[in-house]
Length: 90
Image (cartoon, rainbow, N blue to C red):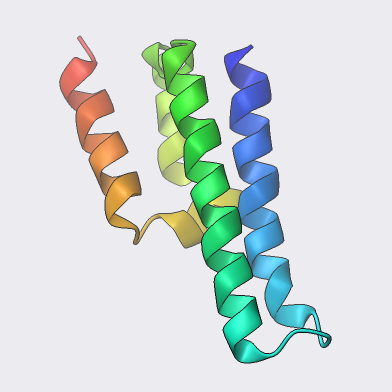
């Protein structure tokens, strides 16, 4: 379901933030993992969109305000997703 995809995106976003606490990774490795996990989070958001999860205004609002997704909000692909969803919204 779209909710499952949305929740998976939240988990990957959280994982991307927790990477900075991994003392076994140097800064370059952390940056790679952050990028990888954030990219996967965006893929899961795309999956939620494909399942029409964001046609519900409550879910679209959650996308914009969910605290777990904060670190994605500066990404160009996240901004583009929001723009497209708002344009598709009646």
